[in-house]
Amino acid sequence: MAVLPTSRASAAGGSAERRRASTRSRSASSWARGTSRRWKSSAMGGAGCAWWWRPQGAHRAGSGRRRYARARMTSVVAAGNPHTAEAAAAILRAGGNAVDAIIASGLAAFVAEPLLASAGGAGMMTVAPPEDAPAVVDFFSAMPGLGGTPDPATRDFRAVEIDFGAATQVFHVGRASAAAPVALAGLAEASRQFGRLPLAEVVGPAVALAREGAPVSEESAEVFRLLWPINVLDAETAATYSSDGAPPAPGTRHPMPALADLLEVFGARAAAPPKLRGLLLDAFGVAAGGSLTEEDLDAAVPRVTPPRMLELGRWRVATSPRIGGRLVGVIAKRLAGEAAVDEADEVLRVAEGCRAGHRAKGGAPGLGSTTHISVIDAEGGAASMTLTNGEGAGYCLPGTGIQLNNFCGEEDLHPGGFFTLAPGAPLPSMIAPTLARSDEGVLALGSGGANRIRSVVAQVLQRVVAGDDLESAVLAPRVHAEEDAVWLEMAERRDPAAVLHRLHAAFENVYEFPTRAFFFGGVHAVLARHGRFEAFGDPRRGGATRIVRHH
Image 1 (cartoon, one colour):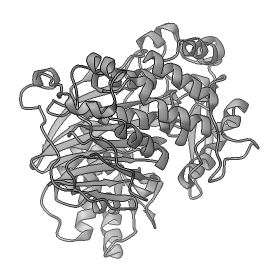
Image 2: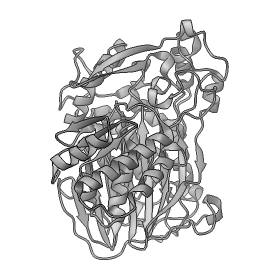
Image 3: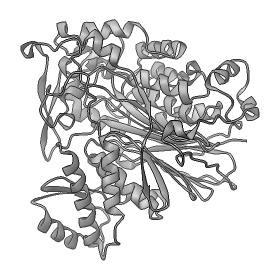
Image 4: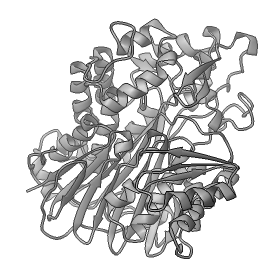
């Protein structure tokens, strides 16, 4: 990919409210006269949690999925689609910070990666402003039913079998599978607390993309093909993505003008459009066979919390305070032990670390309809965000192009059985947007991939901490293990026979993938280390990068 055009320098300025007021009347270049905001470190995890990092050195840029740069003022982006990455870059060029950029990128993902991210879904963002303590914006959903649970006989909740070729898997969808979405509220809260530009400006790239339509990538076309049995449950949902009733082919564009209109309202109000509430209750409320109530929608608000902190060597790691972040820590600590004596020993150690993570949580592997975005800006701010819509409920909000999640139908989120969690209980989530900092620099990473998220984030994190460059860490063959089963990529194994022999002795079931596979997530990551900037988008899930050089 060609290096992007350069843009004017930006720097932080004042409080969130002052920045918004001044942005309306000042050009992006005037941000250079601002000053960085500081939080009390005790507000986000106590003394010792404050992070300070500022990029230094001279710059140059590379090409392809991997991007390198050395410069005084550089921002880097990694995401799951070129249009998603470009939205972030556009906002960085306009003077936005890492949080503005990652919000713009997430909104663009609703268009360019519509089965992986949706305004009808949820997510989580880990953010570290320059010279401030890291924080987590948690906008994942809760179990519905606060206003009363529906009669099971009236629930629209059904099983759909998805054919993966070598195996099939059953997913549960329908109107009752949807939890209250929190995505728009979460992005608005992140903008209010950590952003610089007005949200009305940040939504611009996604609005334009929705009106024009994003061409379907090869990776998205495969996801559409796999999940098409879910998307044809509802005629409006299918028509949102296809004009002929078939899964969209690569290169196909699907303009989403109704979504564009909604995003404009979202930007102007810095909150979800009011009409969505009525649409949610009409289409996914108890009377319609769904699970949502007025009380569920009232409770669907994001929270800003301290991250889970852990230490890996010289690196301090900030990740999700939910189960996903805890398990990343469990596995990463296991991987940080003694060096392996050979490749087979290393793979077995990784597999056993992953199995330890599984035992700490449990659950079954799913498809992992999730995407991730990572950004480091020129001032040293970093943001890492994972978005998900499950596999989708199979139904859109009428007249919007927004497909609702199926979080109440994901087996991974309900190991004790469907509809057994108490109404209002936070749904468990594997997503783990992660930041790490040391004297060497800053790393932002995360992944989609359902139960594999904990395994793949821990593996890439540990490789970077051990000194690998970002490309090597992301491309390295992956392993995931659960109780009596292990899944692994065989590409580029030095001694595959020895690896398989060791694994068959330790696990009852061994599943081989001959090449890098979508199954193992997509770690889209950015790294600033010793003045060198790296961005790498995981080819397993169509990764793309952008470097923005400011003057």
